[in-house]
Length: 127
Image (cartoon, rainbow, N blue to C red; front, side):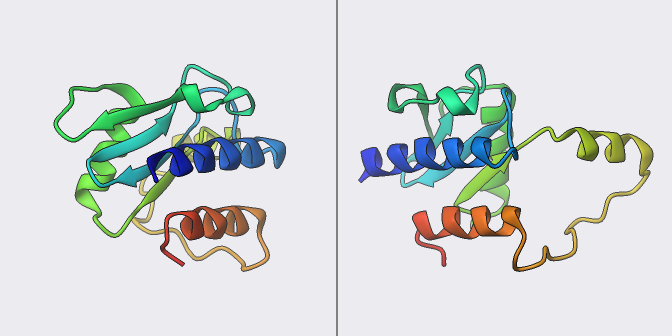
């Protein structure tokens, strides 16, 4: 089962890259029974292979993006997959806006981002 999830991370990393939604330094992760699986943030997502998916066990010391993902999973038990991206417009907006709403408004159902999120959610058994 875990290897299937690793292959799903590889697949969705590649699809997100092809759609132009992610780049090097971005990460895709999934919750597992005993931790998380996360793409290696040192690799460009279009180059991710199964051996580039890191297994972070609960309680294992970590840092950087893996720590961020783990803390999100700890805080939000209903979330089973995360895509972190550093889109230039989002970064620019974050510098301009003083207060960012906790939950952004819902994306249009036909947006690429929502389709990718829905597909990733299906892979995790959430949809």
